[in-house]
Image 1 (cartoon, one colour):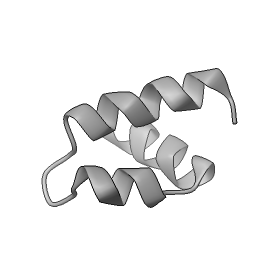
Image 2 (cartoon, rainbow, N blue to C red):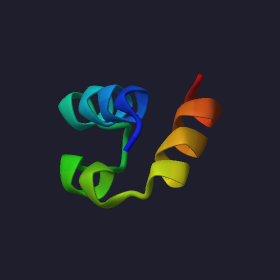
Image 3 (cartoon, rainbow, N blue to C red):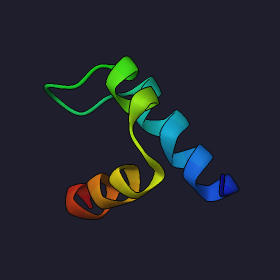
Length: 41
């Protein structure tokens, strides 16, 4: 897995977006995580 993606995963696990839990973030695919980050920025 890409190191940048791991940084994003840690960022969102520490402070998950509203309506999500850190477990949800942990189970997301790399593509889903990148898509979520794109739409939240």
